[in-house]
Length: 287
Image (cartoon, rainbow, N blue to C red; front, side, top):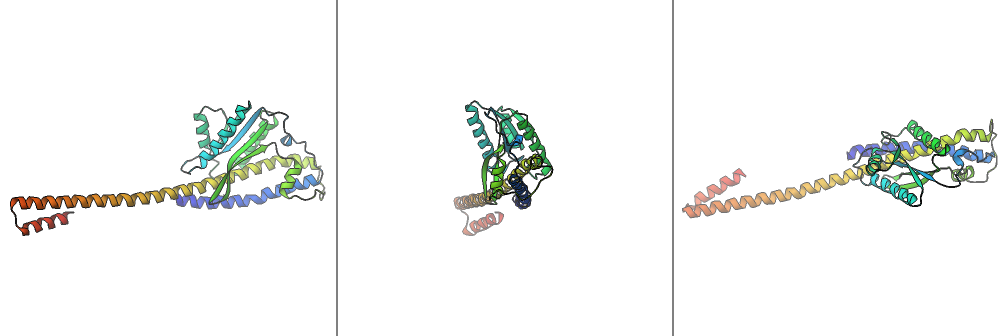
């Protein structure tokens, strides 16, 4: 399992790196739209005046044996949920991964949407399906804010918990500043209009952000599983060595006891020294 996880984490890391140029490019296009004068009136950009219901998108795994990977994400989501609930804010749970579903269902939380089979090897179509559901709920006003909770992949040895606002999106200007920064001066002309292009592009931007989070979570899960299985292997080898020494010690003690019993019995019967030596030699051969 350690070797399999090591192979999969390398592939997941490669996929995450390959997806970054797309995310960078789509952010660059939004930057160009901001320079072209696109307005910030898209529904995905509009923050409600009051927050009555918050949706939590929790990305965990479908399987265990991955160290603290699943528990860290799930507990962070529960802390966020309980804090908002204490403020009188309703919640909606959108769970990705069987471990998250099992935890929250066991504790009688209401689960509004659940997706499985996409965390091991995420595909863009899966990210699109989840993103469309979330966007529809937000645009229809069923939820006022979306919080994304996942594990960000930094390196094979380092992964960190990420709790980020997913919707509403930042303003177009903020996205542009994060993507490239610089003064917003128009360099392109958009047809039919900058607003029209922005309207069709923002849903793709939402999908790319979710897909990136899925790829990071997948790589993080495999990295955690590799470390967990390595630790299990090392512990097993250490236990084998320890038990092997105990077995040898117990066997040696048993042999010594039998030799002493034979010698004592021979002396009691008045046997000669040669008989004693023969019996001890036979016992040693048997063991």
